[in-house]
Length: 435
Ligand code: SF4
Ligand code: SF4
Image (cartoon, rainbow, N blue to C red; front, side):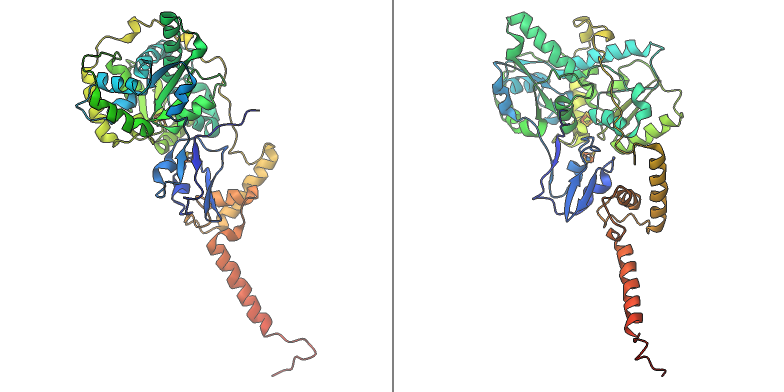
């Protein structure tokens, strides 16, 4: 079986074991052992929270780098809608797309255009009464992974439509093939990404289909190249076609805002997403038909691999939206939602289960609760686990000891010291004399 690819990685040489990351990880996927962080791969959803909080930049994200484009004769660039908000307001979208193209691409296809197509397909899906509500957007791969590992009961709520990135790659390739008669295999499509989660979804797609995207380049890695190309833009070139609705997908509330119903909920920030999913599981959101859930605060504009402050990027994005065409792209790209539906299902990944066998799992849970009760409950993280409950879980799983807790260790040392004092005062019975 092909190994699951993770974009988020640890640079051990830079890690100082400070434990900052273990507390922010939404799936408790990090431990610190022997002064170095370790990522439990099965639990990691590539949300990038640890990249944001590591003060030593020890958490990194792997991407393909710009050189990958040379593997293909014809190169298409697919800029994420969040790219536009990264640059000064004086640059138009035409300028940014022209600069991007001039770096070495033959063709540009805005992912924002594909976002409009996916919005139209979602509007059609919303009318289908057979689909479980509230529908949960699948636009953020970190959120889909979160559901897979932590909320299996919500798998049927996921909107099973291809993402704008995938739709953009597919349409761009067939457009080029038809227009210029270039063989499909010669065309490479490259996504300019705000996050590691998208890179993971290209290498290890959750619906097990091969991605249409041939490489991912992070915004932070291409930013300076675009900035320098912006000095030589041709202001007469018109490349921007996407409408405001597609551009707004970069913002939290953008995707749901385009659906034309008020029965939507938009949540951003992975820890907030978890709280909303708890609410859905508890059946407390029955009046909501669609949930837009994004891992990053502020939406993709706040992606961990962007460079501009999310609030500044939001004002720039607004300016691009106000300049965008009011005409929807859907008039040109006529697609039924059926053309975008995933052909296979998202699987549950039971990484949080204590044991596959139910009775053993219950036994282990009881053991965990007992251990947890005996721990101090300070959640200090000095043991290298994110909190006392996680340490109890690690002990049950056999990856930690009770004395990894410094308070327990002190208790044990004190007990041993008292015992030693007591033993030190003892004499063998033959030598023992009454005082
Ligand atoms: S990327 Fe997210 S899930 Fe993975 S280790 Fe970092 S914080 Fe945890
Ligand atoms: S919110 Fe956007 S930028 Fe952040 S992880 Fe999800 S898809 Fe990536």
